[in-house]
Image (cartoon, rainbow, N blue to C red; front, side, top):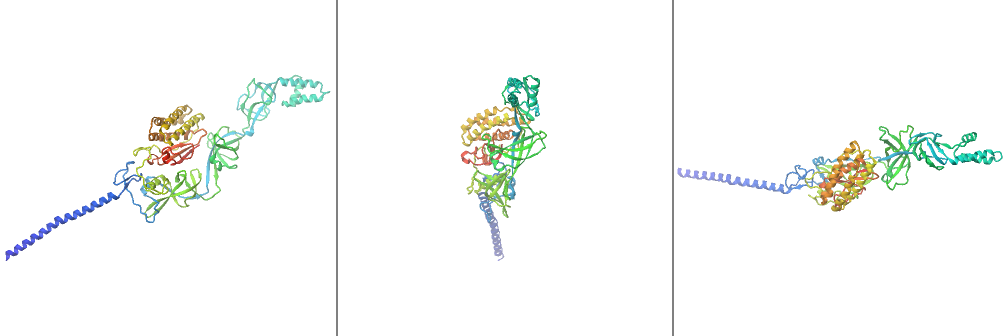
Length: 596
C-alpha cells in the first residue's frame, strides 16, 4: 500500500516537472518568436513608410537614414503634414528648416509712397551767359592780348589788335570829307557813320580827326566780362567782319544738367526739388529746383535732360564737374501697401509672395499672386493680392518655393501645383559641384577714364552676342562668339587705371580670361555654362565698378540653375531670357541690379 502511494507520488511529480519544463521551453520560445515577429513588422513598417530628407535640400528623398549627397548633413524624417483645418495648398516649414534656409518674415504695412530717383549729371555753362566776341573790323590779327583759354576779361578791355586796310581807306575818306564838310556836311557825317558801324567811338573818331593821321591798327574791346572758354584765332590770321575770335562765358551762374532715363521720366516734373553733391566738394550738399525738362529724348543715350539753374558766386561750381543728385517723388495715392523687393518672386508674367500662417500644428506658407504697382527703390507698391497686417516672407522665398514645388503644391513655376520632381538636374553643375554663383559683395563705383569705359563697353556689347548664343543653347555658336569677347578683353588698356582700381581690374581679368578660354575651347554646352557663370561673377564686378558708356545693364538671377544653387548673367534689357536653360525655362529669373 505504501509502495503504491509512493509510486503514484513519483509519477505525479515527474508529470508536473515535465509540464513545467515543456512550458518553459516551448512557451517562452513562442512568446519570443511573437515579439521578434512584431519587432520585425515594425521595422518593415518604418522602412516602408518613413521617408528621409535634407532640411536644406528638400528634393532629397530616401527610404533610409544617412547623409545628404549634396551638403553632407544628416537626413531627417519627413514630417507628415497634418492638414486638419489647414489649406491643402499651404507648405509647412519646420523651425529648423526656416533657420537653415535663412527665411525671414515681416508684417505688411502701409505708408505714403515716396520714390527716390537718383540722377547723374554734369555742370555746364549757362547758355544764356555765353557770348561770342567777334571782330567788327576786317583785317589781320597783329596782337592777341588774351592768348589762352581760361583767362578772365573785363568789359571794355582791349583783347586784340587788328591791322585793317579797309579801315585805313575809310579814314582817308573821312579826311577828304572833312575838307568839304562846310559845303557837303552830309558826306562828312556819312564818313563818320561808316567808322561808327565798325564800332569806333566818337572819341576815337575825334582823335583821328585831330591827329590828321590814319591809324593802321585798331584794338578790339571786350563786349562782356567773363572767362575765355575758346580761342578761335591765332596771331597772323585774317578775320572777316563779324567773325568770332573768342568765346566768353560768364560763370556767375551755371546749369546743372541731369540725365533722366525713359523709365524715370514719369516721376520727374518741372518744379521738383533736387539735392545733389559733387565728389570734388566733399561734405557739401546743394539744393535746387528743376526749371526745365527736355521735351526730346536723345536717340543715342536714351535720356532727357533736367536742368537746374544755380548761382555760382564763389565759382566753386566748374563746368564738366560730375554731379550726383536725387529727387523724392511722391505719388498722389496715400496709405499704399509697400513690401521689399526681396519678398516678390517675378517670372515676367506673374508676381507672387508667400504669406505666413501659424497654428498649433506648426508654421505654414501660402502662395499669393499679387499685382505690382510702381517700384520705389528697393520696395514695391502692391495693388492687389495681400492685406495690411499679413506676415510675408521677405528673405528665403526661393527656398519656400522650391519646397512647394517638391511637395506638389502651388508654386511660382507651377501655379496649379503638380507632382514632386526629385533628382531633376537642370544642368550646369553635378550634385557634388561647388557653387560659383554667390551674389558678389557690394561693389563701389569709381571714377574711370572715358577711354577705359568705352573699351569695357565694347567687351559688354560682344558679351551680349555670346549670351544670346547661350539662350539658344547653341554650343558651336557660343564657341564662335567667345574669341571675339576675348579679343575685346585684350584691347582694354589697363594702363588707364591707377591704384586700387588697377589692382581690382587685374584680379577680375584673371577670372575673365580663364573662363572665356574654357568657353571657346569646349563643345559641351553645360561645361560652357559653368565657365559662363564664373565669367559673369567677375564681369559684373567690372561693369559695376567702372561703368559703361551710354549703356544700361541688368544683372539677372535664376534660382533654378546649377541644381537650385542659382546663376547670374548680364542683359541689356529687363526681359528675362535665361542663358542657362534656354527654351526649357526661358523666362525663369528676376532682375537683381541695374547698372546705369
